[in-house]
Image 1 (tube, rainbow, N blue to C red):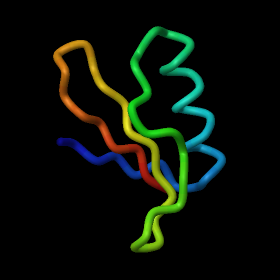
Image 2: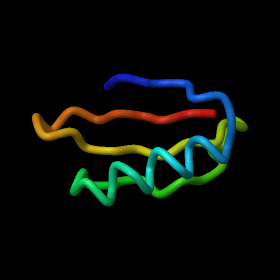
Image 3: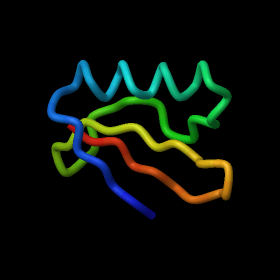
Image 4: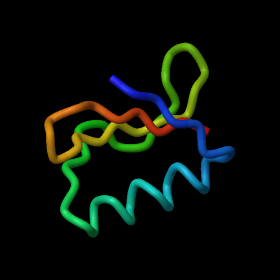
Length: 54
């Protein structure tokens, strides 16, 4: 998978919402992980997992 850091929780939420509105599949809603990261996970059109982190 690919991980992208966007700088803040708000940016994770904003980008996740924008991608979802453009019909990307959200497979992991924005959340705080057990290791302390705020992230969401998106499936791209080629079925690659994209992790969006703060």
